[in-house]
Length: 368
Image (cartoon, rainbow, N blue to C red; front, side, top):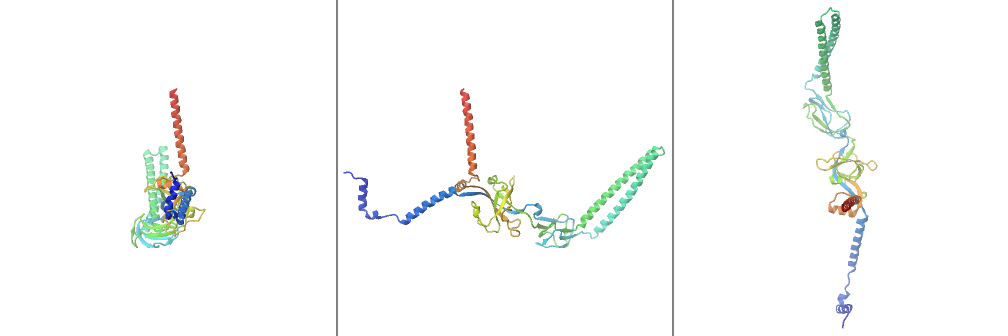
């Protein structure tokens, strides 16, 4: 006599009444439902929610104009330091004196002035002699043409005119050299080139000797136009173009950054790409210049963000789904949008089709 499987199961369950009464706890059903819901929600999230791709890098705040950068103040002439008018960290205006230099010879200016007067007298005498020599040439030429004078006298008069011209030119060159020396020695007070701050005094105390061109102080201009130079990896720099928005975090400013969702980031400042270097820097990275975006809130003013302060930047690129970004990160692929991938796939498919059609046409021609 054959029994069905359900009948046998019922007989077994009748012998194990306790096992028959066991049920899964309600908490386990709830946990299972939550896990299933979370998996479905995560799947929908990574497929639907967009992610903004970013190319990040570090750098510092610099001045765009070379005249706005930190510069050295040098001595125009050689001499000794006579008096300092400033100290480290002092604010100065354009034209304010920084240091007074004095020549080692205290009577140098008087001696140069005397030499100038002497050479001017020599020039006046040479000009008078030149005028007389030219009259002598005219008189000798007239006598020579009339047959009353010799050729030798005529040629000697012309030689004297040439000698007078050489002496006059030499005297004028000496006068120019003395005027240059006087001009240099008169500029013994080194002045501030523009409004700024004396960052550091490099010269010594009073009576210290300095040479022409030696650095006596370091000067930092104020109200400089600031930009941020960010160094980006070469894999990402190909997608960066002038005008791309940038999020910046300055040193000392607390911030919360969400790379894929810049709209909810806090403590960051806006900028835009001004230019991208064509060649890599010494560190192997490419420099990207980021300027302030005038359409939104500006950067912190000085002295809160000074020249040379460190900064970190995120260049905002195109939006992609979250699943694509996860796949890219896991495979360590460079930044690339799905449109570019589809375009490259279409191009490769078209090239394969064209190669296949060309091979088919060559086969048919061979059979013919």
